[in-house]
Image (tube, rainbow, N blue to C red; front, side):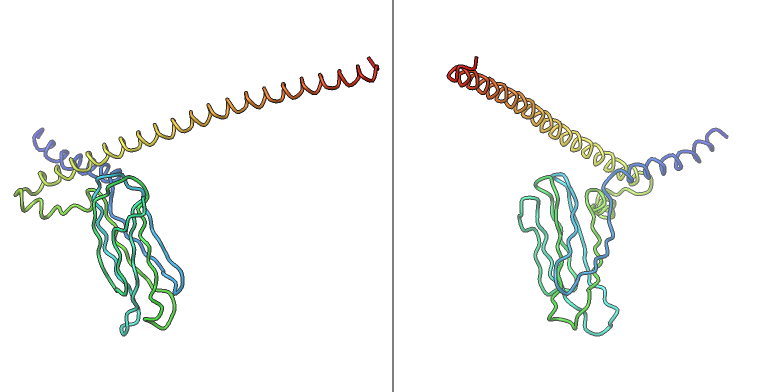
Length: 217
């Protein structure tokens, strides 16, 4: 009976752990954008370095005839061009981040390609372990079932650990900036107070000499 109880509890516990890990770890995002005929719609995500990003985008048209086309541009936090396509109805971009920060994907409509109106674009954005091809990993390493789930859990834990380290480094940077700013404000306040005292002393000295010349004191 004890052995059977363990057999029942273990998968449930594993499922809960996996759900918790994948909740905290990077996951896929399904995004809908309504791109106007004029102007640009962008999506961005703050991603740390050395993270795999995979995204598919497709124009969704209710008209079964001519499908409108769009242009796409993806840039890194430093403005590097990672993906650029024009006059397309669908596409995919994939890259590994080289620097941490906000990665921006912008979409705009090729208004000359259709009669007008907004263009609906569906984006499937994946980062980290969500972008990993687990089916290929399973075939290559010949693993399945619980072993595969444990590998996914291991990847999720590593991603969470890396995210925590990234947040820790960002917090340290923000704390350093805050301490530097507070120090500068303190020195500025002391200098302002010193200047006020010096100016007040000069004014008193000037008034004293003025009254002495006028023989008022």
